[in-house]
Image (cartoon, rainbow, N blue to C red; front, side, top):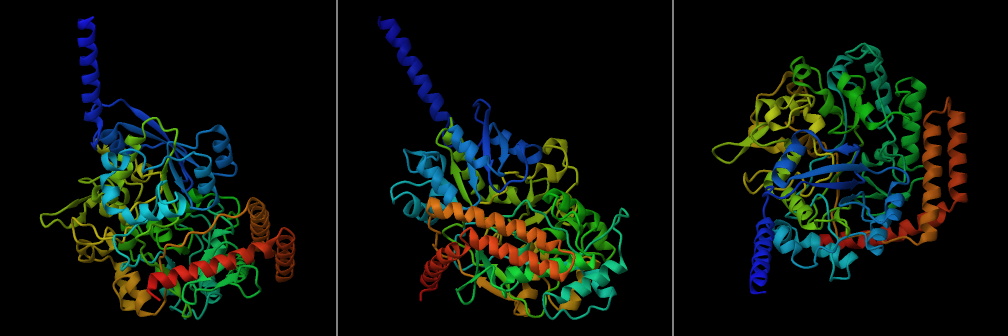
Length: 562
């Protein structure tokens, strides 16, 4: 009996030692392969994470990531199954996030020693974001994750990603005409398409190419027109960043209705891609890469895919050109985190290992890797601890995301290996404590001092600035969206049902309006859309949004110290 007890004690001791050896590490540590389901509402990819990011995660954590993007009905189906996912990224902290908490689908991060042992960097550096989540969603005693794009300081401002980028070389070739307002882009772009009607591969070129993948309450491409004039999407209203008031989207003079008219006019002029209503985000990326689209909603979409080193050397490129009356929204950084939430599923077999992965993504190495690829391959630090891009990194960031990654770093094309979770921890505009510079490469001393290509030189000379942010600042084209601790309240089930019906009516009507053959048909479709939306409860939804707008405005005033 004593011998049996002895071996039992030995077995227990070995188990404890093995368990302890697994804790607090950021490498695989001899642990077995752990394949997790990553349900991400911000993802566009389905399947196993591959390439360089997959290799890094495998080597550091001995984990494989099975990426599950969202689409109509996926959330409800996974909720009904009893397991939402192991690692979960919510597109916002609204109804579905709250439903998941109430259904006990999410893990409490304050439970036991999870944060202390496996998330030390999160606990130390993101304490305000954790506290906000706890107070809003956990009654001050529980925590169900944190919002993305966290900043270490409320004093920073994110780099602008809303600014219209156009083929600047073509713009100069037609004489750089004035663009007084939004509608003025159309004649300018029509001339650009007429000047160069074919892409590099000989396919038809268009001013605009849209996609449905990211439509939420509204059609994404249309509501973004508000972002060029100081408005942030806010339910069925647009929230004005400077006046802190809301504007219902179906008001005749709203930027949403103007946006519909803008794209419909483009369609009638023959400069809107006719595939816009049926193609995917990936299709649009391919068209930018082929030079088939001359205008971009986002700073990272058109330029990132069109501006290859070869084209830039030839003087071709997409750069920011704002209309004279624009006020592009820029976001203040948030110490509270923003609406996309990192969470861990309550049914995860090894939540501590998932916490280690998220914790690593909150370190300088994790943030840099997430944005710029594998260290030592696409970027590195110099002897003064300043970040720089390697020649391969320069090629990739200058537009060739199909560049091959060495087999030793995961192989395949860079774009295929990018992190398919598609979310951030720290904002890219926070300060990297290793370098003392932003994580954003556009502000690294190495990049600012790098020899500028002919295309960017032409833009810089014409605008009298070095960067897009300088351009928006100099032209007074910025409207600051102040970060606050505001969180939209959960809507009642009845109101939520009305929101879904109203949203579908607006989105379906919007796409029909974009493709109207003439102004009379456009006006008829828009009126039918408004009538149908109101029949489903649009006015009640808007009243709720207006009340939420007042709460948000109060939170902004608190953040500003007013």
